[in-house]
Image (cartoon, rainbow, N blue to C red):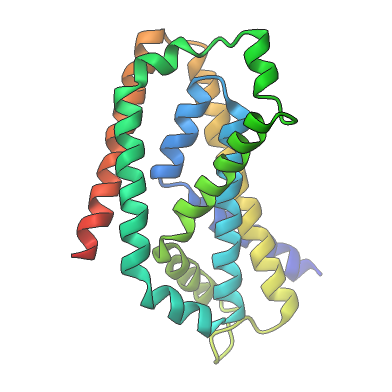
Length: 224
């Protein structure tokens, strides 16, 4: 029981560290947080955490068919993700001033974006799928979990977790660690938002847009 608890803590640390590099999902979460949309930012982060959990499950359970499919379709996944990121990055750059103007929503706008409205539901589902999709198209994350789990010495000779309990602990821990990172990032971004000017937020949006677009361009070039 105690060993499983320590394993859970190690898996949480792995999930936190793997999620921590600020890539496209991080840029989107920071942007949403700076505009006061912390819940939407959290949903995007949770989508990424779910994808991390899926990768952890693949690594821990040794799902060779899924691994081979990811390897076979790596180029297509990178290209599609790169196109999306490039377009989203350009949108962030061009619309940065307009986004600032929409920071303070009227009561009617808030009602339109409530979780029970169609627009609000689609926006929130879109954030979950964005976070999930941008993470799941990066098989490098899976390789990171494989290396980390092997380092813990919990994988058997066949490359899968020694027991189902160990595999389940790893998956839960990774998902929890990833979620903890997104909560930390969103809280930090929200704290910064209260102490900076509107013009600073516009410039940060543009910088984040450049980062997202650059990641997209790199993903596209990797295909060729």
